[in-house]
Image (cartoon, rainbow, N blue to C red; front, side, top):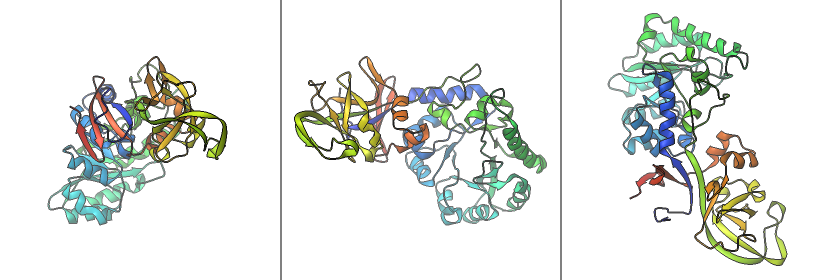
Length: 394
């Protein structure tokens, strides 16, 4: 296999066809009249903001929702032209000029937020207002929304393009009480009703996240904001009416940098130094704690030469040491699979993250940008990240 496109021998493989498939599954579920705003925060849930942003733009997403303005600027600098919403990641008055310069949509929930944008703009600039309807985090309380909307409407250089909130405690109606979700919906819809006909002029009105958009179609309004679904996960029980979703992050791989025999090292419990009575055949692979590999991996295994081999030590920042006793044929340059398939063997992502005792969000987002992302199309590498750049693979 040709690895010449890698700057470092530790990488994720992201299947863009599966990403596209997830978006289309959600879009086909809601139909043509409902807008879809995929959440691509946290470096696209660690899948790589630039490549995934470009793919979702090509799929026809109406907006992308980002957690921070720096990621939005990165998308603009890489040619993404579609509407970009920043959920809420800064004090708007301090960076209002950046929202105007890069044509980004801010989330506002105070009059001061909106005024800062109006003052910085020379013509009406789109904004989204966020309500808190029960998530207990960011947003204007739903009951205070009508008064805030009325004040914002007096500003000359802002245009309310969206109003949204974030639901919690959602499941299939027959699986759990819907009382909390219904309370959130009532607060949101009552707040919109209070501003009368103006509500219908707001193009994007959204309460439904991944589980709500699937399990509660009556809450879809004019838009949905799927986060985890775009990346292949839904917290709901799979049943009829649930879209087919697959995880685009299909593998995490490395290569052996060095193979030799040692008679001592940090092979004791918790990485304590230990002398060995007999030599140990080890392999050193690229990738360690600084890449997001848990120290719990010292009790785990990886795939080398199509077989599982145990990890001997997992405390280094940029390397992991393997026990090659039962894999004497291994040599420098051989591919190592942290999760994914190699030959007839497979270590699943689910197996690894449970072994590391991480929930899916923590597992994904712990994988640092130091790990290159290799993008696949039709099963073949087509692009790779290099720092904050995306490079095509010829």
